[in-house]
Image (tube, rainbow, N blue to C red):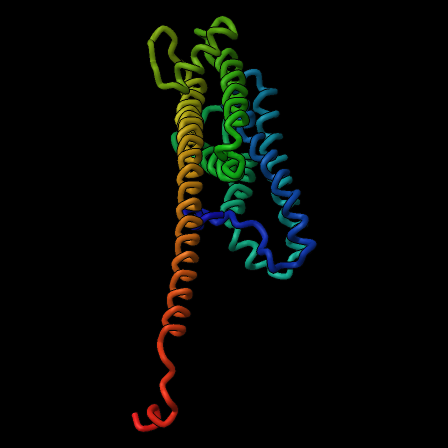
Length: 275
C-alpha cells in the first residue's frame, strides 16, 4: 500500500509477523474481495424488498459478509504475534464488519433518510476496498485486462438496469443506459426513474469515470514508457561514448607522460639534493 493510501489503513499483515499469518493473509485477502462483491446484490435485494423473499436474501448476504470477514480475521489473528497491530493496520475492514452486522440486524422495508445515508456509506466503503485491492492489476502492461473488466462491468450493469428500471424493456436498452451512464453522455432517451436504478446509476457513473480514467492513463503510460525506453537507450549510448572518450584521453595522457619522462634529462642526485 502506497503512502497516499495509508490513512485508509488497509495494510494487511506485517511482513515481519508470523510467517503462517503472512501466508494465510495472501489467500484470505481474495476471500475478503469476493465477500465484498456480495454487498452489491445485498444492497439491491434489500432495497427492492418486493417480493419479501428478496429482502430476506439480501439480509442473508449481509450475514454471509459479516461471518466471512469475522472468520477470516479471526483465523489470521490466531496465527499472528501482533494482534493489536493487525487490527490497527486494518481498521477499515473492521468498519466493514460492523457495517455488515448492522445491515443484517437493523433496517425496515422502507428506508429512512438515516438508513439511506448509512447504507450508501457502507457501499462506498466496500467500493473503496475493492478498488484498492484491484489497483495492483491496473498496470500499463495489463491494458487488455482493463478492457475486459470494463466490458464485463458494462454487460453486468446492463442486466441490472434491465431488472431495476421499468422503462427499460430489453437487455439492449439496459446496456445502452449503462453505456450512457458510464460515459456520462446523457442523451435523455432513457433515464433512471426509480430510487433503486438511480442509486445504481450513481455507482455506474463513478465506475465509468474510474474505468475510463484507468484505460486512458494506461494508454498514455504505454506511450510514455516507449519514449522513456528510447531516452534510456540514448542515455546509455551517450554514457558508453563518454566512457570510450575518457579511456582514449587517459591513454593519450599516459603516452604523453611517458614521452615527457623519456625526453627529459635525468637530474643528478646531488643537484636534486641541493635543490
